[in-house]
Amino acid sequence: MSAFDTVVHLVYLACASAFVVGLHLMNAPATARRGNQVSAAGMGLAILTTVAVLVEGGRINAYAAWALGLGTAAGAVAGLVAARVVRMTAMPQLVSLFNAVGGGAAALIALGEHPASTAAEVTGVLDVLIGALTFSGSLIASGKLAGRVPGRPIVVPRGRLISFGLAVVAAVLAVLVIGFDGGAPALWGAAATALAAGVLLTLPIGGADMPVVISLLNACTGTAVAMAGFVLQSTPLIIAGALVGAAGAILTKLMADAMNRPIGAIIAGDYGTGDAVAVAAASGSAPVREITADDAAIQLAYAGRVVIVPGYGLAAAQAQHEAVALAQALTERGVEVTYAIHPVAGRMPGHMNVLLAEANAPYEQLADLEESNPGFPRTDVALVVGANDVTNPAARRPGNPVSGMPILDVDRARSVIVIKRSLGHGYAGIDNELYAEPRTAMLFADAKAGLGALLAGLSTYAK
Amino acid sequence: MSPLLLADLTVFTLGLLVGFEVISKVPATLHTPLMSGANAVHGVVLVGVMLLAATISTPAGYALLAVAAFFAAMNVAGGYVVTDRMLAMFRSRGRS
Figure (cartoon, each protein chain N blue to C red):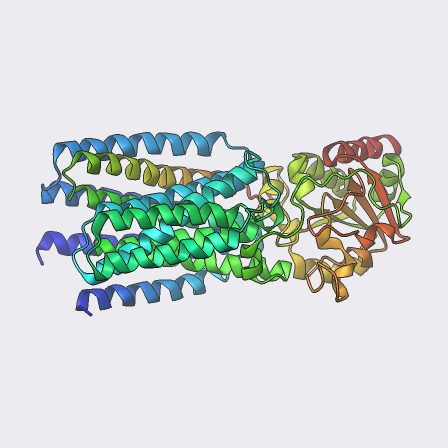
């Protein structure tokens, strides 16, 4: 090994360490930004080092250099622009898009490389299959999150049979590549099969299951990148891919646990009704108590402790600034305000926290499920904004679609105010028993308008 | 199995374990930036695309290379910038 190779190796090791340290610093909000910068510095160093490797090796021809340079420049500009202009409510689809292109790049590496050994063939096939599946799956997920593909589950006729068929075709092509030197045609065939499978697997999954799905796709991209690292015998790719794979796997498990649904059942899809569930005044079976914004404002103004429970409705209405303005107004009056955030509130893990942070909510006020629940019996008013199934007390009983799902114990607060457009069902498609409780009052409004009216009421009636 | 493959497998396994250990401590508040930051980390695939470039010498290969470079660069540049934007918003009660 030449001195140059040794130095390159050591620098790559430093870069991989920067990724680990960077992720470690993400343990706390105060250090998280520095963590991301450490990680980015490691990435910059890894890229510069690779430029040095290419220059020193001198084997890259002019056309390849131009293709690489132009592709990189265009991609960097596209990524920077998208990252700069995206609204925080649109974060899930952008993260999903970046995940898609990462998986796509990993798959293309194996498609462009001539495998030198059986091990490289095996990892190459895995890279192509996982990378291509993640690419098309993440694109569909991103489209669903952005509303370009319908968010409700789309049932493909005989979908499972087709998926099974695709799996068989993929396995046959994999054997051809590895055992019989099937080469490029078989590998491209495998890529096409995986692309189709990615679409087929993501289409039937409904909106509220998205936090699980994008976590899982993130884990897949990590694995695909690690496989690309095996093909190229590149340690930084293997380490970074393994780290991301682990991160995605942990988030997938946390999200699935928070919905009390096995990951397999979520992938099988075909559950619930998706986002568009504003069924005007459903069932009408249980009588509910309505409240005006002014009465609700007075109730909030004279409370000692208020917990705000945000859900997807808040994100959909882009009402995070109103929620935080209300919380600040209450805090100034001496009311103790916290936010109770369910792990699957929103469309990606931690989505609500980012929205509230955007609106300047101090992170000390953001509490998760375990932190929030013991506080509800001491809470005068629980204000539910656009959250539904995660507050349904029916989850404590067996025998219904939300049974066993960990919920926020909103019904244990002394009183509850729910801001909601109608009595429509949530994702699980069942009545929320919380709404019929005697101490629950409904404020029928869009999240943004409802919170605005509360804020106005507060300044008029409670000085 | 070749010694090189064994070494790669060792690195991969230890990487997974380190990942589990480090990431299981991240609080729910930071799950979105964590996912986005991890997303940016797999942008290291750009290094892989660059290494691939040294072996390519056909027109179809150049096209594939350009697309792969576009994807990877978008992943890495966008991923870090958007994560930074998000994390810049997380403020403590003390300062604003």
